[in-house]
Amino acid sequence: MSDANVKSLAEFGPAVEVTNQHGGGRVVLACEHASAFVPPFLNGLGLDKEAAVSHAAWDIGALDVAKGLAERLDAPLVAGRLSRLVYDCNRPPDAPDAIPARSEIFEVPGNRDLSDADRLLRVTHVYRPFHETLAAVIAERPKPTVLVTMHSFTPVYNGKSREVELGLLHGKDDRLARSMLVHTGQTGWLSALNQPYGPKDGVLHTLDRHAEPAGLLNVMIELRNDLLLTPEDIQGAIERISAVLNVALDDIGMSQEADA
Image (cartoon, rainbow, N blue to C red; front, side):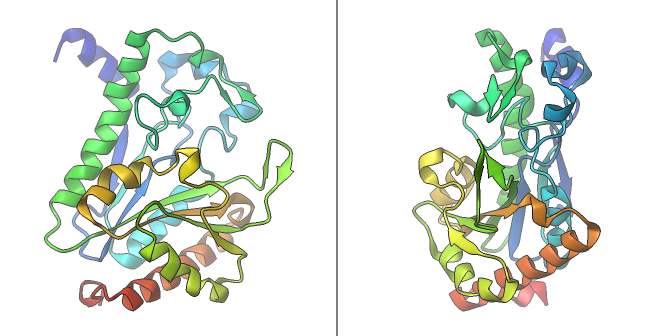
């Protein structure tokens, strides 16, 4: 690695964190948008105070839920440590919104007019470490694995209210999403498939890269972030999602031996 790349890596800091790496449960969890942190050398990307802590910068509450799920399911958790506005790890490098200059109503001045070298730097030090780590965690598991990505979404987007509370997103393989949907009545949440986003929005990159080619059961979970405002909300979400996920996997026929 060149001196310049070493310096850049030090400036970005760790891009990914793994919790419970050798967990023996059925699931591997990923939380791409776990953090709102922007490395100091990027000068906050020029964001105002509201934008810096908004849903545009990270998925509010998603990491807390993911950590609770990791504990309950004995699942490894791979989480991003940098804001999605530095680089959105749920987008491939050629996606226009991987490094957005605007996200919903928020301008991101630090992402304007980036050179190819600037973009490559973020791909190298944010995107690649996240996905290489997730691939390694999946590869070292000796049993069939289920990939679950945890996200949250804002109740109002571009001025439009969203009624759905729990979204179960899927691509070509809809087995787990549909099995979970059958049991969401017990959550009390208004639930739907591929809402508030779907494949047409380009939001399934992590599943497409790591689950679909290997034939792994997978789902992307989106929970409305106004349901995650208190510790009690977080705990309730952990309990409900883990219960629905476990019974759905049982229905499909995934052994629960490792979770016992």
